[in-house]
Length: 122
Image (cartoon, rainbow, N blue to C red; front, side, top):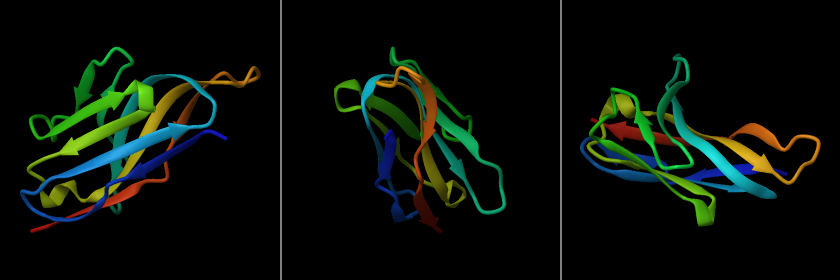
C-alpha cells in the first residue's frame, strides 16, 4: 500500500534547472529520513542528497552548491531543486524514504520510488 511517486524529470539544457518531487502515500504515520539517489547507465546507484525528519541535509560532493533538498512533512513530500545542471547529472533519480506506517506487523520500513529520468544535454 505504501507508494512513493516521483515527478519533475525531463530534458533540460546544461546550466538549466529542474525540481523533482516525491510524494509518499499509504497509511503513513511518520517519515524519518528521506533521500534522493540516482543511477546512470552502467553505473551503480549513488546517494545524491538526504534530509532527516529534523531538516538536516546531506549532499554528495558532486552536487554541493547546486542542489537543494527540502521536505514538507504536512504533504509527505520531499523535493530536490537542481540548479546549474551538467550532462553528468543525467540519470534516473529515485526517491527513498524510511517510513513509519499503519501496519502493526511491520510499522517501520525503507521504500523506493520507481524513478524519474533526468537528461541534461550539452
